[in-house]
Structure formats: C-alpha cells, structure tokens
Length: 363
Image 1: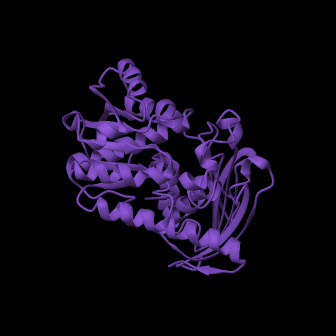
Image 2: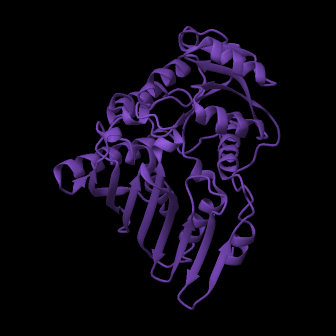
Image 3: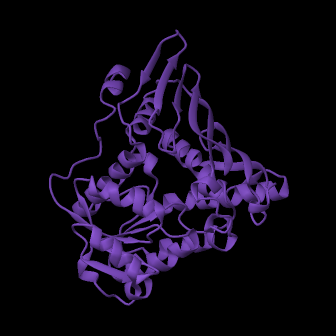
C-alpha cells in the first residue's frame, strides 16, 4: 500500500472482524473518567454495553445505574468480590486508583470474566506481575487507548513500511494542570504514593509517549536515564511534578520525553527517520486539533486532520470495540499483560534512574 493509500484509509478500523454480538461490561470504579469518558464511549460503541456498575458506594452505583438503559446490576466492591450479579456481565473495565487494580482483577478472574484494566497496570512491578499471574486463565488487556487510535496505527504502518527510512529518534511530551483537572484537590489519589505508585507524573502521563512510541516503532526500551523534581506543596509526597526521561530501544532508536502534572495542556509525539518525519501534535489529551503530519527529504508534506472532534470519546469507543471484537471471537488481544509489564519495568527504571542519577538497564 502506498503512502497516499495509508493517508486516505486512516479512519478505517484495520482490526475489526466481528459482524455482530454484544459484550456486557461491568464498570469497576465510578470516578470522573468512568462516568464522563468510559460510559459514554461504551454507549457509542457497536459491540459493548454497560450492564453492571461497581463502586465503594452502593447508592452511588445504583444512582448511576438508574440513568443507563442497559444497566441491570449495581454493587459495592464487597458484593462484587462475593460474586453477586455475575450473570449480569461478561467482562470488567477496571478504572480505580492504580494500587487497587490487582484486587479487582483477581476478583474478575475468579469469576471467569475478561478484563480491560486501565494503565498503568498497577502501582509497582511486583503487584503488576501478581495481576498478570492472577489473570492467566482469562483475557487481559491493558487500556492503552492510543493503540487503537487510527492516526497512531497509521504511524506504525508508515514506519514499518520505511516511509521515514530508518528511525533515528523519538520526541514525546505530555502535560496538564492536574489540580485544575481534579478541582484543586491536593489530596486526590494521584498524589498519594500508596495509591499511585512510584510517582504522579511519569506513571500517569509519561506512560503515554513511552507506550505509544513502543507501539509505533514495534520496539522495547532496554535502558533509561531520567531527571525529576517537585516544587509545590501539593506535590510534596511525589518526586515528579516535573520529569524528563530518555531511553534506548532494542532497535537502536533513541527517545527523549518530558512530562508534567503542572504544565500547559499539551502533547506530541515525533518520529524522526533518515528519510522523513512523522509528527502527531496535540495528542494524548483528547484535543480536537490532533493532526498527523508526514514530511520527507524532498520537501513533501502530507497533513491528516481526519475530522474527529471528540478525541477522548472516539479513542475510547475504538478501544472498547476492539476489546469486544477480540473477546467475543475468542481471539488473542493486545496490549496484553506481558506488554503492560514491559511498561511497568520501564517506569520503575525511570524512577530509579532519577533517584540514583545513573543510566539503568530495564530488567
């Protein structure tokens, strides 16, 4: 397929094979992301519906269930763990603080339910490894929504076909004003190491350019360096209000990334090759102006603005439909648990590299 063909077909789902069917989902964790992004995305999907809601508060779950057409069950976490209403759902979407993913994934696996777990997979490498082991007998997918984004998949195809020559470098960035997102609450869980894990910024934001670069290059990092620091009182318990990290991939490509939970809302990913460049700008944070730009040595430039204006919604809907497509057809899916473990080990190495001031190998 030519580059022009790639550009024309960027909106076509290259993974979809399911013709009909419906995957019934239990939403585990009813924070703002589940309520404002995940549930509306499922409502817009072709192959999913929300039929169960699970929260720390039974009243909260019941109130939200009453607003949804297909919701059959509302449960507390304890009721979910005890196996109540298991006939009401086929799979679970886990969107709780990182350190609680393992508990809910273990419960879902015990009930024989497929799992879509938000990133990062857990708070530490060790707990992530326990999660993967617990879910060994059920489908497990980590919710990297960028991997089903049509423009990101187009980048991956173009790189694989040599459109930029040999990849040389990747530049990535993601930042936001966390306290604005959570209404100025400095006590929210992303700033609590017991719930978030190693830190607040690289765990939550830096993982986006890290994982998307892995996907686009089809390569894994082998070593990292990093620097980070925190200044404001709200970030006193985490090391990474501001962070920069670099890594070397197993294909020889180098990457340099920055991230911050106290910066202008911004994101980009650029892949520089020997014969061209791919640039995805205003990405990761659902900006309606996300564009993919392809530039070549001979001065050619092709710009893709594919018309999407609800990036969070579109990306999440694609992610849920992909998950349903694979689960309902009984096919392997990705990114799976082993894929997620590579990120967890890389995250741990990034924080260790910043603390030690040394380059760290990824084990």
